[in-house]
Length: 213
Ligand SMILES: [Zn+2]
Image (cartoon, rainbow, N blue to C red; front, side, top):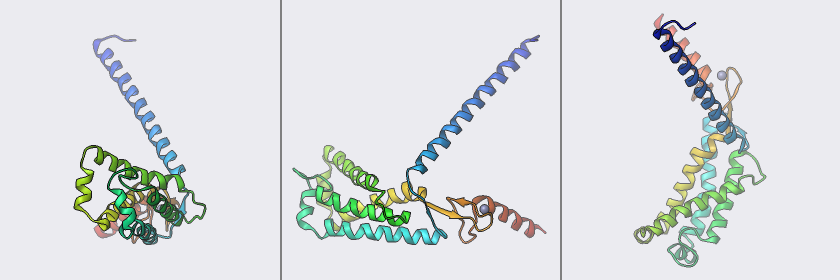
């Protein structure tokens, strides 16, 4: 039974804590679901270690670089349409197919698959770049940009854009590793420890204790 003002205050505080806790739990559940949804979108590839993944990423980027150079840096006929007008501005329909196809191949290489699963992602990446170009164009700065750079800098710009997207938004959801100690499949593996985060923490604690002795 509530007997005093203090009790009332305590009750209100308790219900607020319960309410906050409920929101916190729901938020965490939502976050977890969102993360799971993200990871379900891509096929998974098991890598031996971070080095192998970095080498694979370098190779994937090389595949795309070669095609971007072919259709942007060295194809002056196609490049002139990137400026503005009926076909442009930005990546032209022909370049769009060539670059997207190379991204599909690169994604298959990263996921160790051969089924062209990245078709939609690849075209979306190229279209995202063009949306950026359209925004520049609408603000009247695209022509300034294109006048100040040459075709090889343009190729660099496209490549940097695609590379960042692949590195930060796609590769982390593809690459998996196996911890050298607990054998858990994980998205992170320490270098050179070859351990998952939990095992690395344990190893560090053991090390600290040994030093203190
Ligand atoms: Zn482990």
